[in-house]
Image (cartoon, rainbow, N blue to C red; front, top):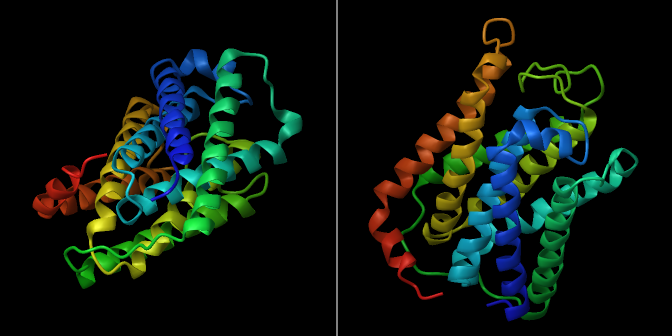
Length: 275
């Protein structure tokens, strides 16, 4: 497996994301005024959901710390930090660091990037195998992963190519107008999910998917809670793109939950692996 330094940085990332996510998710209106750039309370609560999900991705990865079991989760965490840091750098002239929340966000992303760099160096140095025993991947599961990855790729590409006045900035999908800064941050999130799920298309067994799916559920639930809390901002008849926003998360949550339940016996075996 990767080094103890990488494991420590992943654990530290988990703690930072938990603290930041709790503040953003539980106090979105206050946090919106303290955020590094101009965002609404709905956006802040949604990003708080990302952070809470990231905390579980990191905690579970550090607990198991077995590359074949957690490599999709670590890839997601690494890419999230790198991509969000790139967005911060690209819009650095709009970043305001004059509040504890803003500093906390930047520090959390910075620690995530350090964990990513350490992990990537370990990966190139040690070249751990992803081969692991387990239940073969059914054809329909592989098909669902391909479908999921394609959808995430469209969302990521659309966000990176978005311009002012387009669908992404004018509330056609997310129910509120967004700045390009925020759209790029959303695109970075979707890109991290897409690229971390991509290796699972070629996975031979379901084993590597369990920790990724379990953490993914915890990522989706707070995002959906944020949407339901702000349901009054949606106009499903006038802007039906909101149905896609909510529906995609609900569909992914249902399918992932069913898969984990259906293969729960194998999941319990993995969860008993000492960390």
